[in-house]
Length: 495
Ligand code: NAD
Image (cartoon, rainbow, N blue to C red; front, side):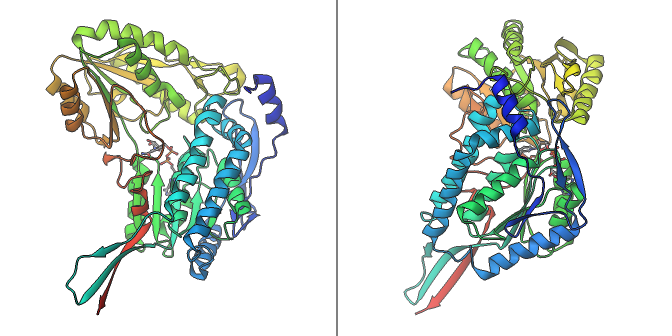
């Protein structure tokens, strides 16, 4: 049953929201009792006062995680017992999906249709997917002489720290926690200061499912909390998703402390190439619009650069502008809303800064204004620019807002060169009816994911997700994610 705006609003008013940190299997205040207000981008209302964890709280969480790991309370459980706990956790996430989705929508301004339909179900699926992997991934027996037996096994790293951003708070947290826990590690998770709420509730549900104290800890806080984790000498691995600028710092903290493993999922400026033989212009235009306006453009994979062939440019742009109208922002609690808020006022100002600068160098075709300011919420129109060249911040830099830059091309080699002329390499798309051209173009695009005649199509967990170049290293999702959270060990026995 789909709930109405009024029904969601009344449920929101009754929601009990927890803001304390989750350490050693219990909610706790920060050691110095400090908190920060967590406000909703929907109307500016304070949702909770959240524990502001600092170095001493990080110390507490890391030592609890270490103790849990060394005790074997989680790491040494039979594979089927670990699987059982994670499957139960996934079940509890499903049972509480409405509450979690509402929490996520209030905290981030995502449409309730997305949090109920995508974020929370995908998080539950991710947990069960990695739970099922626990007793199916095998070690290896190396080829050796007849006098030796060589075993290659995967062992947990120990304490994994996960630092995550605000655009998919529950889902990205689970992308780290589920495989790390499946491998037997203990985890300390730092959610973004802009969206800390769902992580706390997820950890409580994990505990209810049977995860022992210390196996999963959540320390809300700001950059200094993340820095304390990334610099900590008793943390074995830092798995980070966020901006390239902070990713660089994280790599530095790891280098300067204990050379912990560093996995970075960073920014993007993904190109979408539309060739003149694009099979279905209407479908392509709707997909292009969705690729950049979904989640208000706050997507690392946002297809924010559209390269369209000269012969179809005018026609295609008209269709994109029509498709963009479906993303007129509105109250995220309404089930009809397709585009909600940006995360906060600073992000709105950042996006408007790019738009104002863009107006000087490119032609604004649609949008560009703040909307619904009287609501106290953070809304921006879907915005489209026609750009004569790619040598401007609008086209080169990650905006993380609903802004599409369009470039024209007439030669495919040039288009591929422009597409690849970016420090990022997270995702790309090519639209063509010719299978050979599409495959050859996909091969030449320097990106972790290339979509052909679609965008954001996936089977949730079956594809490795991550970037080339300054979009990061390592991969979330798929069995490859397990490589991030295990060490390979060779054991050689002389017979
Ligand atoms: P951000 O880099 O500002 O923050 C990410 C996290 O790092 C937050 O928890 C933040 O508190 C923490 N942090 C900030 N400074 C820190 C420091 N000095 N040391 C340690 N931790 C620190 O990113 P954001 O603004 O929250 O998210 C947007 C960015 O995330 C975009 O660049 C986007 O492309 C990227 N992103 C990437 C992916 C991916 O999988 N590649 C997915 C989602 C978002």
